Amino acid sequence: MNKQELKNKILEAKKATDTVILAHTYQEPDIIDIADVTGDSFFLSKKAAELKAKRVVMCGVRFMAESVKILSPETETILPVAAATCPMAEQIAPERVRKFKEENPDTEVVAYINTTAALKAECDVCVTSSSAIKIVKKLDADEILFIPDQHLGSFVQKSVPEKKLIFWDGYCPVHAQLTKEDVLKCKAEHPDAVFAVHPESPKEVVELADMVGATSEIISYAKAQKGKVIIGTERGVVDYLAINEENGDRFIQLAPEKLCCEDMKKITLEDVYKAIIGEGGEKIELDEDLRKKALKSINRMLELG
Image (cartoon, rainbow, N blue to C red; front, side, top):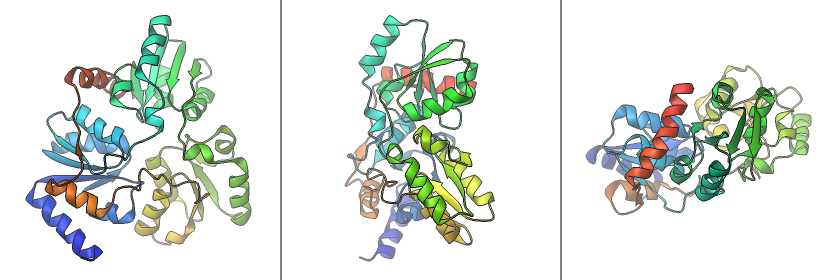
């Protein structure tokens, strides 16, 4: 069976089983091609809830599938590849946060959306990379534990100097590889290009950017530019822009040998097909008490953000 034949079978199967396919922008172009909805992680979770989908196949990583389940407990949610996970989401043990809160009752705990359901359940509020600054500014506490991404936290701290943010040792293994030298080299090769970067990147990289923002914000910024744009985030964004925008070669991937998330690329068309027809993937289940606790931190994010 060739690739197009497999895509056709997927489209037929999802229609026959009333399945909605969600795909994160970092997925391979073939996965994006057969998806019903494409976007960043929390957008996909909200979209699943809005659609009131009975069955969802989440082409992303585990915490994204968990987020769908948190918001839509009645939706059958399937992760096509059980091993597709996010190292950053699992870097901090929930027990560590619980102990910290017991010892520091006046400190609020902010969790990046890129965290497990179990970690969200221990935190006071979630944030996305686009809402983090706004939400942190609104919190009553002067001292805040910001987890897990220390680089995003550093970016937020710069914009909210009136708060004291505490960071632990979390980071995105993909974005954290970037260096100042990577950026300077690419800028020298493309002196007429502007540079957009994700705030999960180290401070020395962020300081060289013309624009810093979430995945969706980088895409919007890149589309609005008339000239070349160096993209400092996972290569799926450049793949997406190259396919969907005119003059796609004006989008330049920074450090392509570094900015590729192996977990995001684990899902294949065959995996998606098997997940739809019930012969593969993992059905996501959450303890109801844990789900409700995690939902509180997400609901507070929606209220403040």
